[in-house]
Amino acid sequence: MEWFLTQRRKGAKLVAIALLVLAAASVSAQSIDPNAPSPVRSNSVTGRIAARDLGDARLTDHYFAFKGTPGDLLITVESSNLNGDIDVFTAGTLRPLLKLRLYAESAAPVSKGIYLRRREELILRVEARSPNDDEGSYRLSFSGSFEPIAGGPDIAETETPATTPTESTATGRKTKRVNSVGATIAEPEPPPSAVAAAPTPEPTPEPTPEAKPVETPNAKPEKSPEETEKPTAPARNTRGRRPAPRRTPTPRPVTPKVAEATPPEAAPKPKPKPGENAQSGTQNGKAAVPAAPALPSTRMTSFQGTTLQLQHPDNWKAAVSGKSVALAPAGGANERGDLGYGMIIDVFTPQNARNLDEATTQFVDSLRKGNPNMKVARSRVQTRVDGRTAQLTELTNDSPFGGAETDVVVTVLRSTNELQYFVQVVPSKDMPRYQQTFQNIMSSVRLK
Image (cartoon, rainbow, N blue to C red):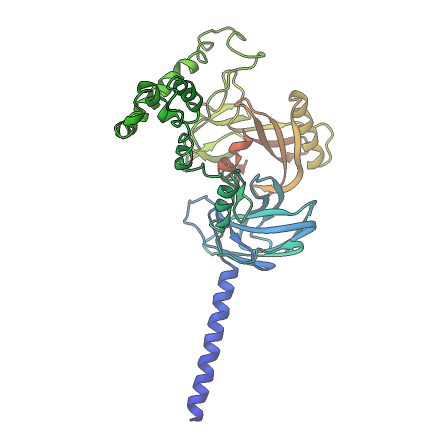
C-alpha cells in the first residue's frame, strides 16, 4: 500500500511539471505573421531562432503585441548567438518608436526606454538570425508603463468582438472595428435586402401614373440594378413577377457598360506623354509619377566593386561610376533619372571630422542642402557594417513616385578623411516590403 501511494505521489509531481512546461510554452508562443502577432501575457518573453542552411541569408521574424500606458516603458533584451534587430512600432500606423541591435558576440543585457504620452497598442518585432549552425535565443523583459494583453487566444487576430456588427446594424451608423493590436477592420456594407425594402412605398401612388416616372429617377442613384428596369416598363407595375427573373441578367450587362465608359476618361492622361517638351506633359514642372517596379527577388547575386563586395537581388542591376554604385530594379527611377527604389553607395570626404558622428553630420547636411524638404526622423543609431562601428540615420523626403520617401543612411569610416555611405531609398508606404532586402544587402557587405 505504501509503495502504491509513493508511486501515485510521483505521478502527481510529473503531471504538475508537465503543466508548468505547457504554461511556459504558451507564454513564449511566437508568431511569424505580422498580421497576427502573439500577445504578451506577462512581463517577460523568451524565444528561439533555428539556424538556417548554408548560403541562406534570410532573417527570421517574430511578432509580439502588447500595450503601453502613459509614462516610461522599459524593454530589456538578453540574446545569445543572434545577429539582428528588435523594433517596436505603433499598431495600425506602424510608426517606429524603438530599435535595438543584437550581436552574436555580445551576451550582455541591453535596456532601452520609450516615453509614451498616451495609451498605445504596440507591436514588437524580433528580426534576427544565427551566424552559425547553432540556434539562437532571446529573452525580453518589460517594465515601467508596460501592460500585458489579458484573455483571448495566443494569436489574437480573430478577437474582434461579435457585438460590433450588431451595434452597427442597430444604430444604422458605421462604426470602427479594431483587432487586438489596434488595426482598423473595414465595416461591412449593409445587406442589399435592407436597401431593397426602401422602394416599397413608391408603387403606392398607383392612381397617378405620371408621378411614377418622376419618382423612379430619384431612386435610381440608390440602386443601379433596378434603374434600367423601371424606365423600360413604367406601366407594367402589375407584372412585377415577370420582370423579376429579368432583373438578374440586367445588372450583368450594365456593369461592363460602366467599365467601358471609364477608359475614355482615363485616356487623356497618357496624352501628355508623347509630348517630349520638358514641362508640356507635366504639372508645375514635375515629371509624371511612374508605376512602382516589381518587388525584389529573394534570389541574390554577387557584386564586386573596387572598394567593397556585396550581394543584391538578381532582378536589380548595378550601375558603377568609379567608387559610386547604384543598385536599382528596372523602373526604379522616374523619367528624369531620380532614384525612387534602390540603394546608392559612395564615398564622402569630410572636412576636419574627428570621429564618425561629425563625419556623418557633415554628410547629412550636404544631402539636406540639395533637398530642401528632407527632414531627419532618427539619428545616431549605432549599428555595424562588416564588423566595423557604423551609424544609422533615417531621413524623410518627397518621393519621385509620389508621396513620402524614407531614406535610411548607413555610414562607416574607412579612414580619417573617407566616409563610406549607403543610402537606402524607397517610398515610405513600401518600406515594410523592402526592409528585409536592404538588411540582407547590408549584412553581406565586405569592405576592401
